[in-house]
Image (cartoon, helix red, strand yellow):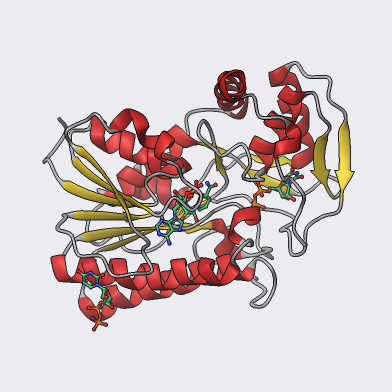
Length: 330
Ligand code: NAD
Ligand code: UDP
Ligand code: UDP
């Protein structure tokens, strides 16, 4: 194995990103404890790992204290898709804030390194473009996205204060839109929605006029960035943007998904959700400089791999579009 064998806690480990991270860390030979309350994640996401002797799964809600013994903590627990985090917004804020306090308290007792899965949503609907870590953001504190955006901002504050006040080694990853296999087919994010719709021969639901932009990172690239950030020197405590700096409009995403699936689905316009950011793209100079990291998988390659996953999954589970609630929020 590479480096020392560590005991690593991954909260939210049965979710989309968490399951890929657990797989990577188990593969690297670490002892991995995956903690999840299965709010949006599933046992099936980590089923393959359950037979590994260096993997353990625990059902637990991070808003309650957790007493375990580990060397490192990746704090990923939190629903990430707007449909899910707006379903129970008070719980979303509790998970971000109480969850961060509990995991930081755990890290403090153990003197463990801790990484926070923060988000590009801390920049809100940005007035600066592309977004550097120095930008403080443009966030509505009382809108439908605020439970997530402000919860994550408060979590960053807590991480910064546990560092200043208690000398913890903290890492803050500001993750931009990430996609890939094991996204929940029903979670309402654009890439999974479009692929599921295209494969079912249903219209692709394009919100607004489709000119709003995001930058999409394939999951394997993102996981590499998270691991490098965790392993970075103790002095590397400032937030780091992790994402693929190729800005793409939602209209273009629809076009690429149609091409990747070979689908003839039409595009159907729907209303733009409240506070939907118009433009978003990371400046990843800091990640390049401090971590030597940048994404290697381009959008078409990543989409092809993701389409292959959903094709297999549809073959087994056969979800129909009518099973899915894909309505925009707001
Ligand atoms: P996900 O919804 O698939 O995973 C989140 C996991 O956290 C799920 O397994 C869920 O059951 C678990 N969880 C939720 N509340 C919990 C609680 N109170 N206690 C224990 N577990 C809980 O989402 P994801 O895309 O894998 O996102 C993982 C993390 O990365 C989140 O913190 C999210 O905010 C962050 N992030 C993701 C993206 C992205 O594009 N995927 C972008 C920015 C930030
Ligand atoms: N905590 C935890 N596991 C631990 C240590 C602490 O879950 O191993 C929780 C504990 O419930 C506490 C929170 O983390 O409420 C913050 O801990 P800290 O020591 O920072 O603050 P205090 O205990 O003084 O509130
Ligand atoms: N979107 C869309 N159709 C969908 C789902 C999302 O046009 O079926 C748009 C959404 O309005 C937003 C973009 O795609 O502008 C990205 O949405 P997602 O929920 O994936 O991520 P986030 O808004 O959190 O960046």
